[in-house]
View 1 (cartoon, rainbow, N blue to C red):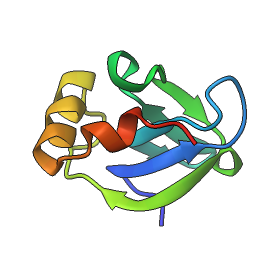
View 2: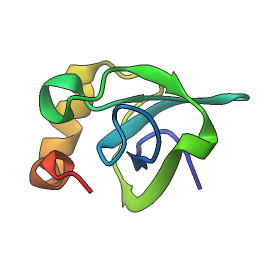
View 3: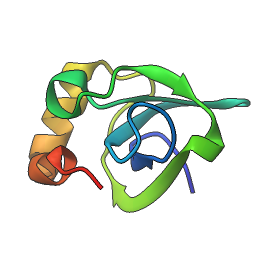
View 4: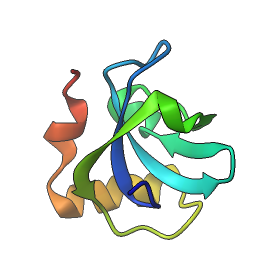
Length: 86
């Protein structure tokens, strides 16, 4: 269920309750970004157990930069959703 472009919510750590976008899937975790200027979540590698997927997904290439992610979020109309905190 967790794939590139999936919007996830961080469940552990300093970013707990904030949303991020999966930009790369690896064997031992995923790399997510907020982007930082939108949600405050920096691009970082996190364990699978520290994120929970949401039903939302955007269309981005693997390892997309923050500007590409931000424009895809705008196109999908998810900017206000991403700013929320659980």
